[in-house]
Length: 78
Image (cartoon, rainbow, N blue to C red; front, top):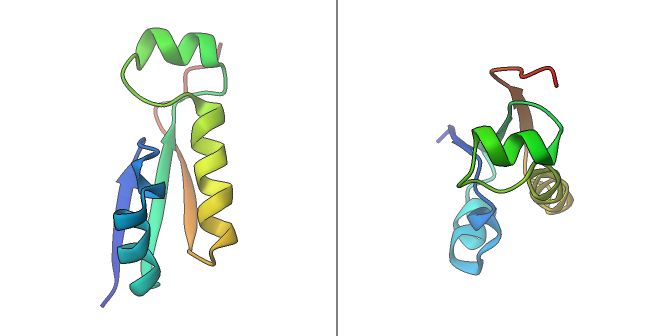
């Protein structure tokens, strides 16, 4: 079974969620970014993890051998 998860959340690293992902390696994890500035992200996305935290999540998931994708949408240039 193939599927995907698109999220901003760092909750993917919680044990329960991570175990599900590890047992279904055909799931692609997509993490969205609107830019790279933590300051701007806090203003336009106040209730989501910072871009830095999202990159950490992606790196950890990739380290577990899970397929990951970075989604750049919408791009906020500053």
